[in-house]
Image (cartoon, rainbow, N blue to C red; front, side, top):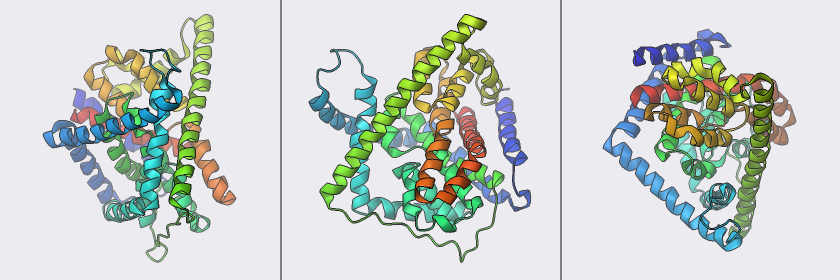
Length: 393
């Protein structure tokens, strides 16, 4: 029965994507089926095999060690700020982003990341039937972030069609940046973080191929990656340290605002209606959670967390998940965890549109116009990933 429900969930995801498709005759069904098969295989390998366990354990150990190194710097500056034995979210989860950002900067400076992103993107283009630019952009979004990725393409932004622009932005919203992966791993199990990142990469291609299919002229599919302005090694370090700190502070500020606002809204709804706002959202999203494979007994609570992620951000939702994780079955915890690992929320619309507008005002306006459709597609990607994990685990 569980498999039948999840299969209905898959049909719903594809049906909702097909419903808003711009050009159904151009949909490349063979590529979509191939990528769907790859998603199931990757999920099975990562979650159900010894090799997958070893791989994820290795990735987790790397990030654990990096977080240890990061804590040395944090402790030097902020040691004693938190009471002994107490846990500080800002110090332990957000500030390590600064160190991860530095490592990304070093890999960028020595041209290791650009080469990796370009060749992996080229390989993916052979599978997804899309252009090299779209494939490169998806990989680059994971490596450098949903805003920064457009800087690497700024020479070509003015020439990119609205159709291709949608796919580029959808990839950026469906993935997460490596700079905050370590932060996620302190809040949910690393195996779900790694699995979601890999599956969302292909899921973004699948949903975009249905919602926004188009042909790419080989003569126009020329990938020109913008090189960063030549800096000395220590100039680069300073820049990436500041960039990482800005991200940490911005995320911290958003958490303060969103968590406080959610607490206020919940209190008002509870006082007026006798039920919290998150509980109401839980009832609205419960059918979706159920079709993702969550048992109905847990669907309302799970739906509330899903909705929290959509209207606030993934960090707030992960904190909410942590509060009720011990009430969920392992199956439900896996499904909701992978659903949360993406930038698919309302605030990301403004972030991406603002990033593009800063580089090209005309294209920024284009992105702003299809903002809600962008969020719609990215949310379907998260649901697709969650259903696949629910079927495999």
